[in-house]
Image (cartoon, rainbow, N blue to C red):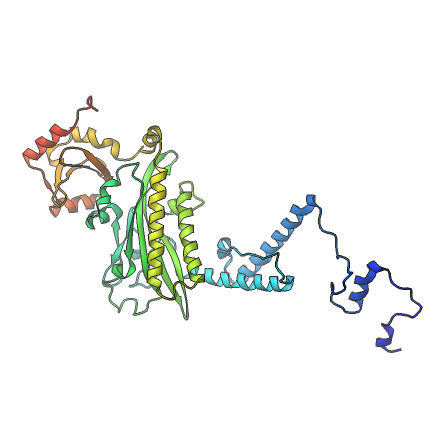
Length: 414
């Protein structure tokens, strides 16, 4: 008897029961589920077992995804990847699995491209063609990228000082604890305009399209404000061979931006994540094909609006909460230091006409011509010296000093 005949049922065999159809079909090499009366392979889980079944499936899915990421050296990229499964459609399990794997590998490749190309909290240096050189790191927490030298080295500036240099009237608001955050949007082409093509090339692998500089954000040590920081959020076009990708790259103090740190600001992380999502959604819709710079500018402006609106609303709190949040800020020192100031500490800003009072511990207080306190900020020592030495803050005349002292209210009057 040949093999084919051996597989045929015996004529004397009884008719198989109705619910045995599925096993009989599988023995004959038929695809499961083709018969109209096929019983399910296993009963659906009871409601009480549903969570356990789903959890087991998720754990298995995460395990195989992690294995795929490790095989490509991209396990650190897996945390930010989100994929969807359309469970209610007509797509077969096989097709669903293939699409999931394809999307996972594609997203891992994109994430690895971004991770390999940029270094957190640093700007790209065209001279060194790197994010890791000494020029790429901000000078201090309040520094933002202010442009590039002809040789392609980044230029860092105190955020408040940069606003003053740009004659932005919002600079004097930053000493007010209830004023919120100021955001400055700048074109990437303007920031890199001085760069000589010999440094970085005509089409560098990192292209700055747009930038949002914002501050000041409090870095808290417990309930007190230990320090203040600014951030530089850049929209970069990252090129790797024939591939390119838009990346939202945040530069700032790691204590503020590291989501796992005790001083991290979850609201700031959420707003930056929303901007990254807008960037990714625009790329999926091919909005960047027409004009990548215009699209990057729109994302930067949206980010600036979100930052200013959120922190303005967040700081509208009760008087008690504001006073508590101002611990460590220079505002509360304004009038005491004004009453005790020496004559040579009273200066006049030649561009704005404001009275500039040089206080202790790098504090600078601004008053208008009528003696009303406008704002208080902290400047680095070299910034104060530069403004005095260049004559931007000239010495007040005896008449201006007398007028200022007369306008400062006494301690009892306040």
